[in-house]
Length: 198
Image (cartoon, rainbow, N blue to C red):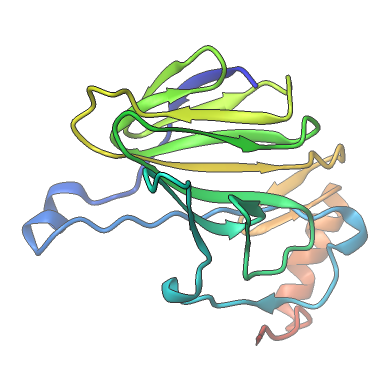
C-alpha cells in the first residue's frame, strides 16, 4: 500500500495542560455502520488498558497494542459490528514491521509521536501527520530509521468501505436525510434505547 500524508486537527489544550502536570493523549474513532445494522440496540464495551492484548516481534523492538483486529498473533478483546483494524505500534529506532491489511480495506496511519516511514516507498511521517494508504497490496510497512532518537508511535487503522450513501449531522450518521430527521425525532422522544455495558 502506498501512502500520502497530511495533518490532523487537534483539540488538545497544549501549554495549559502541560503547565498542570503533563501531556494527555486521547483518540476517538467513530466507525460508520452498514445500513443493515444501523438500528441495532446500542451497546458499550469498556476495556481497561491492562486487558488490551499486547504483542512484540521476536526481537522485542516492535510492540503493538491490539485495540481492534489482529496483529502479531494477538486478537483484540472487543467485538465490532464490521471488520476493522485499530492498532497502536511502538517501533524502536532501526526496527520495522509489516502489518497485513486486506487489499479491499481503506487504511491510514496517524503518527502520535516520533517520526518514521510508512508504506512501500518509505514515505516520511512525523508527529501529528496522517498517511492514507492506496489499496495496492495486502500489507502496510512501518519503520523507524536506525538513527532515530526516539520510538515511532503510530496508530494503524483500517476497515472495509461500506459503499453506501452517507447523511450526517451532529452525532448521527445515516444513509438519507429522511433517516437523519427520523434519528433526531427518535432521540428527542427517548426512543434511542439505553446503552448496557458488557
